[in-house]
Image 1 (cartoon, rainbow, N blue to C red):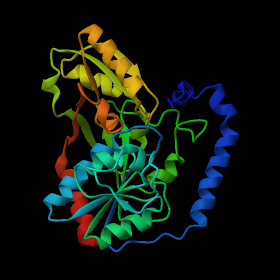
Image 2 (spheres, rainbow, N blue to C red):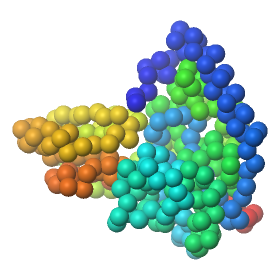
Image 3 (cartoon, helix red, strand yellow):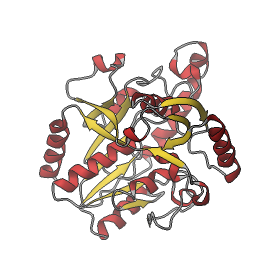
Image 4 (cartoon, one colour):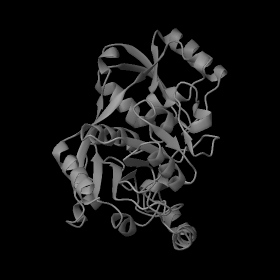
Length: 323
């Protein structure tokens, strides 16, 4: 699914859909009031966002994992496992599990550290704790009321911001901005732009600036590439690829979390060969490719770089000290 254009504008369609947004909000409210949140007994750091779609949560979670590890902690990732068939709790094994079983994001996270999937987040956190975790990184759980968080970060794509600011389906918001802000310790703003809502934030919500840094960009500099992606906002990937000096001769968009098949990949390989270009995709998409069809397909690997990394470190240290 692609974000509809009207999510970026506050025109007629969003206004007509506003009553449906009230139903969405009512459902979320009922869920919160009927759920008793529990704490797993070790610090829980939540990486989420206010909107649907890609914002940069996965590289943020990895950065947080590296930071906690450097501080002597044994963090584990806990994710819902969106797109996977296993309900969990289940510890992800990147050598055996597939994206169709556990989801692409948990599979990618498991390449960095211990990762669990669980439809019931608290049960996943509990299992992680019992397996030795002394810190939990909750992937995309900001709106999940079942688990008590010690610190929540909202990750925002600076170019997209919060769209038209309306709640689904009238806009991309998962909840009203005011309720989302009440949940977070800080906003992590990825990119160079400054969305208008940022200038009106309360002083109690700091904004940590960060940007996407390609890890293997030199592999594609000056080379012809055909890029394809099945993520929420593929243009971000294409822009990053272009920024390292790749000559993008063609692109192909797929739906977010698209399950690729061998025929699709064969068609991509034939087209790229005809263009004299190498096939490049994202790290997440690579997780979803059939293992027997990955030959000749590379990924642009990325990491998150904070403009002032000490800000994040100080927040984490404070949370650990309080816990």
